[in-house]
Length: 345
Image 1 (cartoon, rainbow, N blue to C red):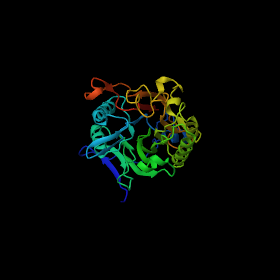
Image 2: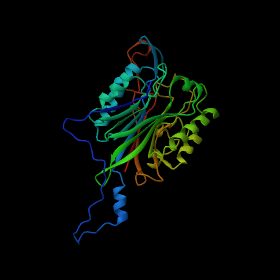
Image 3: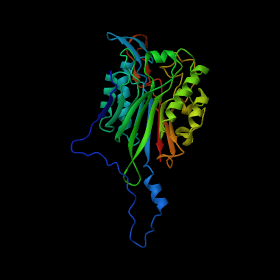
Image 4: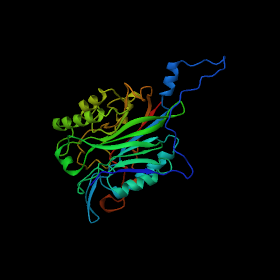
């Protein structure tokens, strides 16, 4: 079956697409006003307006037969989905709402449709690519939602993966160009990669064999020369730090670090074994970790003059009530991961 790109664009009637050109500031003839130098005009032309990026692994993996769920990690997908949509919509409509939302672990079409609908008025540009040729495999789970136009979307399957994940899904990365506003008043293309690296399969996530595969996956992503690398790396200061530092060594700055966040501090963890969804999970024995990231290419490209100045860990609150069986009366978070919001200026 031929792979197809799935775009979702909802645009108010009568509106027009934004311009894709970027013009330098006109030189004034007023002698009392300083004339900008060529270098100053270039910096202004190549600088982006302040913008925000949100990444969150929403944890909607499950296997079903004839409507019966026999595997779910994390559990309670049906209960959590409405609250995932609600929290994303609330954040998208807020004053601090993100320009770009990167999601991981959105596998089912109906889950994706519900999330799209929730943020359609604020994030009308969406991208998700169908990659699987085997209908028994899971979707790659990657998706983007944006305030600004998206183009050049492609999905690339990782050349290396652990056997279990290779058998179950086409794991890889979603690459796209976001038409971001520039300070000059025009638009500037920003190349982004949304990815979800291996968790190790049947091996421990920190096992040397898993680390080797994960390094190969990082190498494939940075070889695309993206301006932003976003997503669940399953690596960070506390978990597989060599993989994390390997990514940074290729000219990327960590948004959390750049904004003044401290490594190994509990306020920065995006995955916590104390999360109600993780306590009894397969990785419940792991320590708290910051494994979800927004990385900026700091050596060249449109992000050179941008800096992360604020980060926030999102969706920590157990807002999803449970009503059935032994879990009745308890509440869980919207996912087993927390979200990471990064502001760039």
